[in-house]
Image 1 (cartoon, rainbow, N blue to C red):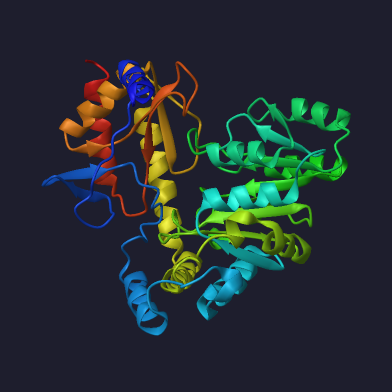
Image 2 (cartoon, one colour):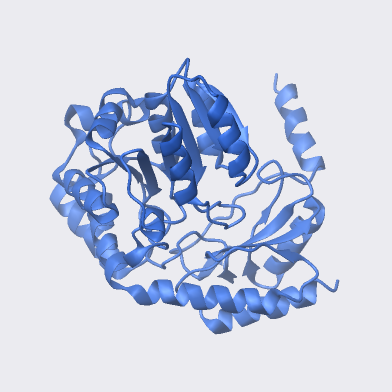
Length: 384
């Protein structure tokens, strides 16, 4: 009955691609507990260290008292609470767009946006290293999917120039989650304006990190255009959960009317909207968190330059160390774990074959001493 599934699972195991979950026994942080053992963690996307902040915990508790726990319905029935509405207004103002719309996750936001905006007769232009949620959204939309090599704007322009699509949508990660590099968003926008295309920016790993006061990639490049559709998540740097899309009034209203992942699901708990509102205050006011990330990133890159493994040219908290083979990457990750360090091995199909890596993720709450400990053990392991 399950023989086909069993064969698939065995095949994944034999290739060293089998995934396992780790179960935390306490809150997220730079130091975590798993099965009674303490680890120094470099694998969280809690970049600003807000996931366990006492002010966010307090906001959740107060939100539960005021609103209860569940939203109780979808946004378009009776699940849209005043905390949701206030958060959308604050997010739109924070990012610099006329309007914003909440989604339950980044995956759902991307699926909703792309499928609502394009379909048969339209074309989607995708960076080949875009996140899986964007690839799935493009396929689900039934628009023509046109991929271009990573950051190759010359090829993108060639394909935009010859396209006869009714509606053209260029989609890109702003900070690529497996490489940590930043897309040339200003140049992408210039191409979109030249060829009358829309530009969807997935700023999941840039929101809270890039730009003035953490306002994201649009602030980072100091750009503005009605052609930009902006998506970011609230579960990474913001330390909460959920996602949002920002754009022009007409774009957001199209999503309200047509985005199935917005319409046909229960709204996120309003207590989480309360926590996100508090998180935005901390993101805006506590610049020391971003400064610490910059210092830690520079220190780590400088210390790891001498490794035989390749360090990618990332200036973000995502610092990939290219190992090569999946087996060696997994073995190195396991060896780190044995020594009390958590760093995931990222293997195909998530990354290209032969480019398996350790993905080091830094947090504002890491210390210089934490980074030095990691550097020491990596230098030991590369010699084995």
